[in-house]
Length: 135
Image (cartoon, rainbow, N blue to C red; front, top):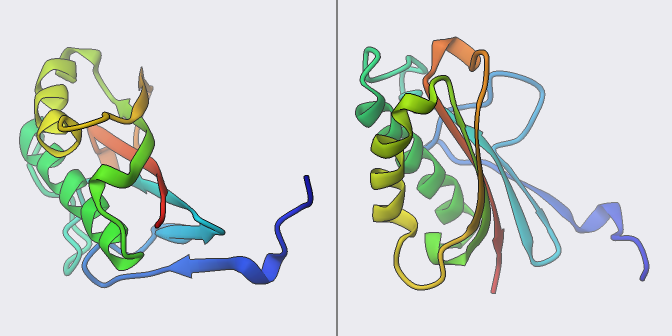
């Protein structure tokens, strides 16, 4: 199996999702795979964390940001094959899981890991990254 030429890598960017808060891209297309960076609940226009500590509001924004990145690459949530959910508190699992199911619950749901972490950027309570297969 040969290596993927660097020329086949493409950075995906959209103003419909928050700008990265570090030296990374919102997503990278590598062949027919799309690797989406973790999204937190930043408002794409202001860069300010939304939700004021309400994990449901944060999760809705995280999923909207992730959907915008997928759309910028020409993908839909149904093409996501793997996600990682990072929670500041596992006590939020049921709330996040319910909202996550609204986006990823139909058809074949992505493989997933969910972990509690000590902290997330900007004091967020939830972050989700994804890998999608592009048509």
